Length: 343
Image (tube, helix red, strand yellow):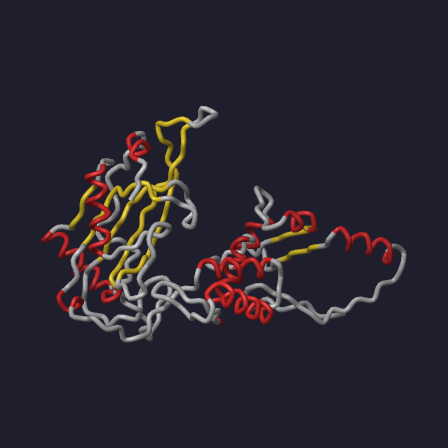
């Protein structure tokens, strides 16, 4: 594997990890979390920090291969792997090297938390569920891994892996976990990145969903003939993919799915430093009043595009307008607040 060691020597080393002993992002019950913490307190966590030398980096990559840990942007995840990423974050750092304009070159440091599927508690985490949808049977495994790595950019797709900084955690699986060799449920095979990018581009162009499905089938046949999938990706669009595509599209336009609608609206229309997904929203804003408990009992939002204002002056100035008022929109206002009566 070709590695730019000259870049390594001029990079700033990552500081020792100050993360908590048991990452809060692990999907564990309180009892299981205490058991993991007690294990670390009694035995200690495994781990090693790696220098930017060929010997250390070779050892780091050998460890990742032995643990069957995939690093996005560098290696593909085996769909039968028991390790899955529960959390990832990244930040930029300046190197001691200078670019052509004399500014420090920037690289990105990623931290990822992996958890063994045989230890995942489906009733905990960001999206808990009573039904276990994890492919592997729960076997009381305590294995989890923290991987800190340095990349050329903060984009997963276009990021070249430069170095592994740290591998730590509980790196060994329980015997009961090792004995599990067959999945209870079929593995979830992700959509091929090329097909997903193609479909997402169609969503951006506002192509109807049925037409997107037809176009994706044509693209898949031209690219992979009659193949359905391989060990890493599939070539068929499903209903779950359409949901994911539209979420990605909304996220690109500033509509975060994990925040409340009223928080998104406040981010777009607030008086100080508004951040709308498109400038047209700011141009169309006439009045915005967030609902603040104890201060007011109404959420108010008035929008009018420049074209609408032009038409209003053209057809409404000194004339009578007949307007329908059969629609009422209310955004999570208290139950005591009712629509105004029509007059």
